[in-house]
Image 1: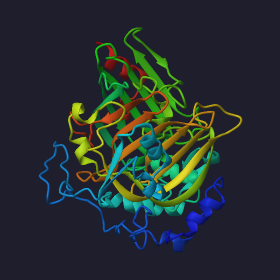
Image 2 (image 1 turned 90 degrees about the vertical axis):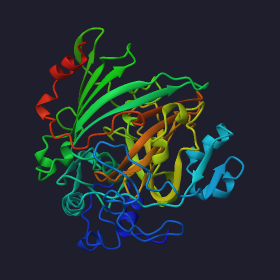
Image 3 (image 1 turned 120 degrees about the vertical axis):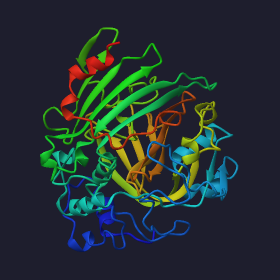
Image 4 (image 1 turned 180 degrees about the horizontal axis):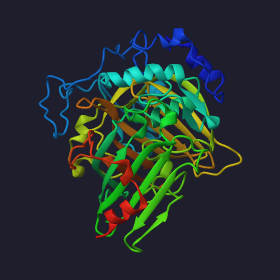
Length: 450
């Protein structure tokens, strides 16, 4: 890699260190040779320089509020296709997960397009991020964040904890309502769609808050209401996510079941318990690439280098479910891949704790700090599951976020596609009517009663 800055050196040499103060000279790089959120502006080989991304609706699409997003890169041709026959040529830029997919499924392929560094955020996020570089700190042994608020807490990271916190707290607007679909897919390609209406107040992104200490240790209020199929309808979960998992009992969660017509505390919505609506194909803490407490693992940076990841897959998001969901894997003609610099780091299970994943390897796109790809290993050290998140620029907000997530279970030959919004109403990123006082056990009982 051409640029190996102070922060990267510290991350590699001292992955378990607590937050180290970022020198002013490094902070001043934000908006200069680094983007406002800490990516390298300069190009590298086939990766172009970042020139601002899509901070507004591009002129070559037709968009009005309430529309699904059109593809501003629809005319881009495929540069090359990677498959089982030529994967060795691209070994240096393929994750171990993608290599495994090609070995497991001979027809699996990756259509690679020119790199479009489209990620961009509102100016207020950039301003907050630069301030965070001055004041942000880890606490609770890496289990929490102090000082910072809004935007990305550690744009010039010192260790893997900070990189993962950048993912966890990345800007996704303040109040959001959406409807999404999830599909646990059998080997033969059969599936039943689960439809979920969820909403969130991302307390971390509240423009009225001045620091993490103003958040009452709640980074996120979240409600998810399953509305289909009929046998699952009325199941509701409520999560109050902790900013520091070592304080006040950490994450608080409740679940309403229409079968019992009762609300119960749900400490099982965490760690390696089966994920909600996942049909056992994923864990609670794997939703969104990773969420929740980091305390069961030792975290360490591996490197930062160009890797091929799913990005700008507007075509996949615009497809009908029947065209996207196929046996063994998604329709790879619809998924777009690009060469991006990624932070590559790993989590190894501590000897004193337990989890079904003994090792997890993450690849986070530098332009979004978002988990783009993950390899999940079982207790025998064998690759078990491969995760993929398709990063997409929501130029109407603006923000960079996943369009859909996929978890491939290589041992079962099945996969889970979730977070899909293809045939659902467009996401409302400006749901100002949401009120934190509504996020109570009683509120989810009212949602679930039919």
